[in-house]
Image (cartoon, rainbow, N blue to C red; front, side):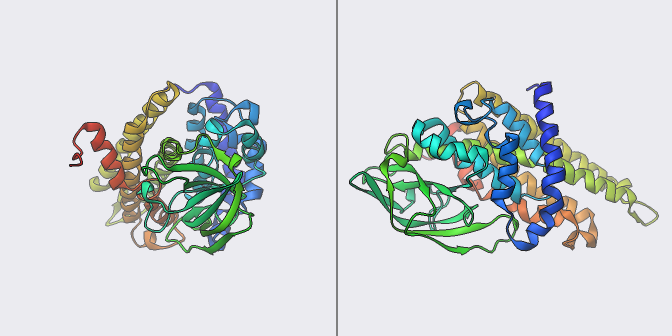
Length: 384
């Protein structure tokens, strides 16, 4: 994939925004355990960053996903994973189905303010006992006149304590588990919605994550996204964008980690020479950079397929799997070369070590990605 001057201009604009509007405040947000989503998203919305690949009719730029890729990579310059993850929820996890399948009225009511940064969005899929196993969710929405009555709960909801609406996956029928679900836009200020608690996490400390309960929450059926019973399919499609987002955002993050440890080990003296002069160090860093570039090529190829209208499930699953594992490898190796300083919270690599561990869990665990890949390869055991 060849980036044009327009791609590069977008990337530079994002990097400047990160340097002035995000990175100076990340440490403070980490300590507070939350960032001001409405304030930051409004600034991003004013720049057009929240609707790059969304329809112009609803305030987006109407560009293809290669521009989203340029944006994602540039967001990798944030000093931590929390903010890129929260932004990704807004742009590529909670709104793709709404943008593609929602009615014009629904998009006008919720997509327009999400793109503008006036609304904060979250995605409601995971539940206790039903994380990667999406088909097993228990939250249900029964019809009552022109409304749905929703009961259940969702867990590990990024942006959950600040969000204005949730893209909720719920059971709306009694049929087969892959055909009885629907996606519903759920305003989180609705009666019966309870933010049960803000979760205390290992990493991604600047991002608020919530457990949310629903008790007889009433929403109009016109808030359903697309066809009833198609929610599982729509969510699987959303997952592909989520997985590519996660891979793309971590590319630059890993590049920076390698470059920072090069600087540190070059300056650090031990046993009469620079640490970087030890073959075990500079060879290992060369291996890691090679792996990052190989992953970048895979992500770019997957994005090309997406732009061409092809099914990217196979490559997106591979990219997601490889990203999670490579992030852990890069963070662990780089932390090791910092020595004792690598174990100090004042060293940025510790944040990467904590934050990127989620990549192998969220959006489908590594084991789920392996199962998807095996199915495409024709090696997954058939049900008997």
